[in-house]
Image (cartoon, rainbow, N blue to C red; front, side, top):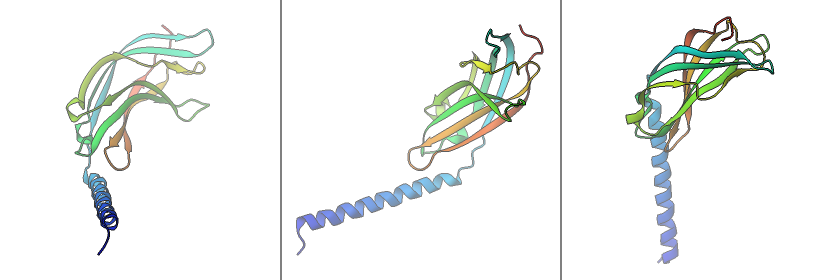
Length: 167
């Protein structure tokens, strides 16, 4: 006969093995989800566009952000971190990214939204590189699952341009 400790150890090992297998299957099941999120950003107004005393350009803008990220949510999604970035090129850097707004979406019910806002974070460029600059608005997201690995993706929206004169 086996002792109580031996039987408890065998039962616990079996239970943990089954739990690990279930977590692996749960994580793999998310690979069959093919999300199709949509987003649109409309710049309504350039509130101010100035050259600061230290020589850096700074922009404040009012915009409408609408997105439908409901397809990112599955039974395994804990939350989604989303942020909007302005992306542009300069002679010095091939890619400049400035975060303008961010948020955490805790549930599928909150994943379809429309926000009227000014940029939450300062849109500053080191130097005088923003006049007449074309830029993209990019909505980035990071899906945080209950089990398994995180994944990230983005939607790039083109066709934005800053004015040639400071205001």
